[in-house]
Length: 529
Image 1 (cartoon, rainbow, N blue to C red):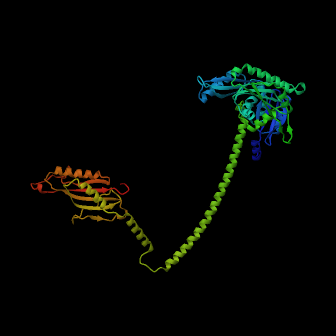
Image 2: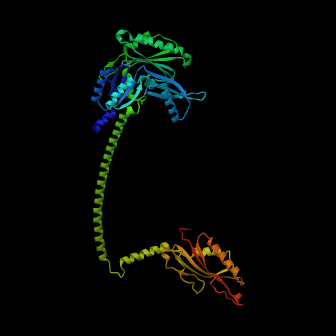
Image 3: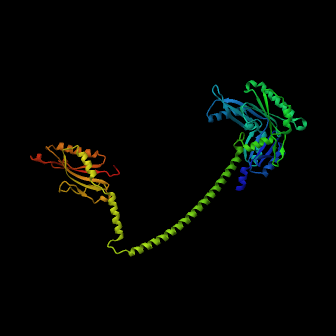
């Protein structure tokens, strides 16, 4: 079982494996520098040694950098499509171009400026996957996380600005790796055009400078033949070497008008502070690889599952630890809050007892009164309620005045008014017979919200035409209903009862009668208006 400190260390640690056709070299990241640990041969003995090394250092993720001759590159164009359709199209194209390999890669590098403006794409693949697969199988067998697989030519494209300071024009990167050989990679405005790997003999069989010069001149002649197809007039050649070899190259390379050489000294200080100078560029590329940690190019999902599971385990452990800390903090806050509430309750209880004792002492000192203090409190509350909810018939009179202005034949003889909190309750009582002044019922005044009135009136002058009189009364009632402040209007009595159960009677003196009626009018409360 991995403890949290060990897990944190493994997440921070990183290492890389540089794979050539016949060798593989392990580099570890120490003190912000890539340090070569050991080299393994491609045979069975080297694979066994690699297994033992993984058993001694388990769990640390690996970045793989491949430098082999069996890597193919294709530049092509495809129609400009949506991301999903383009991915499906490029997968089919890569499967058709590169068969019998699981290590394929494609990337959109730009877009044409003429015609249909198709997308420019780069497709690449490892034609001999067995060289890489033998090392990946050992990593999978040891359950070692695999961060990704990248090739040296594709990674060189990311380093172009670091090496050259810029990526425009036609540029040729020349380097020599101890596990693989002499690598020459050509870029056109940052896009990979081709890459060539040549096996170089050991130093005792000849001078490295002469071999490098001959191979560079071969590539220059090839580029001269392709000059019409290559944009730009000057070819920039960047030579990544160090020490005496770099000085020798300065003397043996022929100067040309269309070629400009850039000599990049890769000498560096090791952990002990000593200046390291050798003809190979392995350490430089691995330093940049572990520093930049580029994204995965060739590794599949199945090959990277141990990295995913490791990150998932680390995430679960971190989440559990965070939940543990959060729970502890929350519990501490709850305990602290409980203590504060307990102390506050004790203080409040003591204050209550003290105030109760003071109140009882003060009450005993008061003179005797015929009224209980609770009754006095109730009376004060009722008085406050009356003061806050008082009302008057002014609103009722205002509404009636506006409607009566349009009906000069209507004369009101009595009005009984009251305030109520239930507009649907039937009006209680009959109009008094003492005269025209308003009879007011203030029994519900403390809670009044609605105003209700019982109106007694007549049609004057009345010529005996009951139909015309009732029409005037009905129109008067409708006019009242149309007022914004009116809640409801009901006709209680008409001059003539036309119901089916009523007796119709009369005499020759009917013309002298008055056309009297009774209405019930209810106004809305203040919140509804």
